[in-house]
Length: 291
Image 1: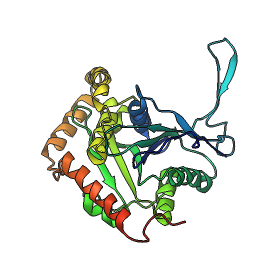
Image 2: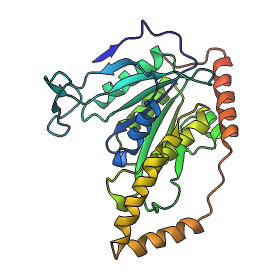
Image 3: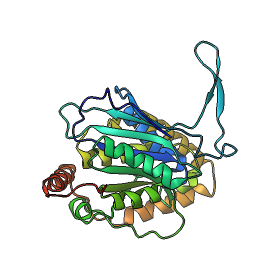
């Protein structure tokens, strides 16, 4: 179910895995778009892939038929491909997965991700997600982070997960990473709920900017500025044409501005605290991911 091509891969610089899965916790594909943007214009070879056949109900996630460059018909299946992005001079290389949440065999799918993390010696796994919230599209998107690891909670000012209820693959993965002894962080960005499934590059950029602060690697979030501006204009037009939406968004703006958010540490502070945490993890004798 997992195909790998690690043999020809040279040594990685203290890699961290960053992943997002299109599905329940990726409204408007904001999180997967963020990872796609992170890999764009970089040499990011595929080093592993998960066979889709055991994991999907293809009446829900249907394959597509297309013509390739040679005008041959090809079938496109749901892809879960791991790519490696190197950052010369940076604190870490990244192992990236922008995939599709499976319908079946969550535990097996999560174990495949953990196997890649182990074999590439990833120091940490970061999951990205996006959820609908009562926030205005005209204000900066807010990113929240959580972890079950006490050291990361203290180092990065994160919260511990409080959610109870139905979950998706990411919830299962976080629990299994915890049991495997692999440090994990979940970052989630809010997306204005009244936009439905309309694209929201501003939220994707916010995820990348926060990721850059935490990991200390350039994510290129500024490349989404033009897209964000274009979509902001489309959202403005849609709201202005709706007699009910316009006053509602104005109310959300007043509420957003009134709320006093706890100040986040600076980007430099976050990156420094993460490096201290990872260094302490490496230095502890006998510590490391459980087998």
